[in-house]
Image (tube, rainbow, N blue to C red):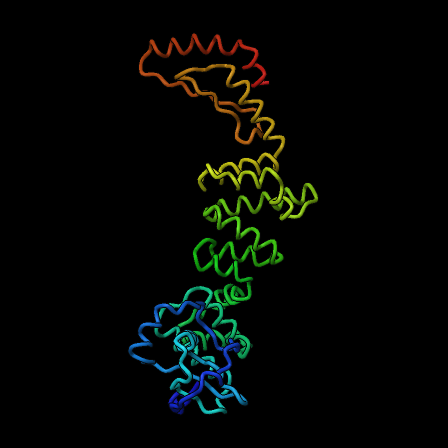
Amino acid sequence: MRASTVQSAHFQTIPLSRIDLKDDTFRITTRTDIGDLLGSIQYDGLIRPPLLIKRRSAFIIVSGFRRIAACLKLEWKDITARVLIANVAALDCLRLAIAENSLQRSLNLIETSRCLRKLSLYIADTRDLAESASSLGLPDNPSIIDKIKGLSLLPWPIQSSILTDTISLTMAKELESMEADVAIAFVQLFEQLKIGLNKQREILTMVKEIGRRESLSSQAVMAEKRFIEIMGQRDLDRGQKSRQLRAYLRRRRYPRIAEAEKKFEFHHKNLNLGNGIKLIPPKEFEANLYGLNLTFTNLEQLKALQARLNRIIQLPDFKKIIE
């Protein structure tokens, strides 16, 4: 993009009816709200006129989508705009659109993705793309570019969740490989629970594995009665729903471990260990290695615990746990 490109733009009064509002070729911003602009434009006018280019009989917006939407809301009939000469190349228009956004404010992740993806439509060479991105204040690392440029093609519910920090870039990349309706179902679940990446990944993994083991789709697993009951309990906060849901999925995914836990809890309760003695089961019940934790402050307490422990290990419930 040459400096003369934007300098060649001239001011012109344009009827709003001649602007193609559906053409998003050069749209960078993810914002559609215009409330913050209405008052300023109504009382002070367009301090920075939008940038347009004429294509056939209509004008295409290069920069100023929200400003033009605000003028329409105010029922203006025409606006003063900066109009580029008609033979300006599409890539140069795109670079102008990106520059007017990225060099004035910080772009969010989806806006950055839009910029990189749209640039890649005109610049196939990785090195040239990185160089062009760098000159516009965008990430210039090829691996980063490749990682984020596809985000703006994800279904909007997923993009929206990225913008609200409900899901991270890491989770977005995992969802990117799924069918759209499945990915959206997971995003909607994470929106409800407001949980971090590790718990999101735990739920996603267990749902997928349950589906594979039981020949069900992920959506079918999430549509089952108990799953819906947990998510629909109004007396539970998000944290409680998350814990119950993960426990339920874990029982479904690992029925043998769930059964071992249930058996342990039943017999453990019957032991009535009391204060000072804690029986620790094997992790995930994968081995037969138990632990005992004794808490005492003096020798007399330890002797009392020893006597109680000697009685406990003779109980049938203790033997059933160990065996």
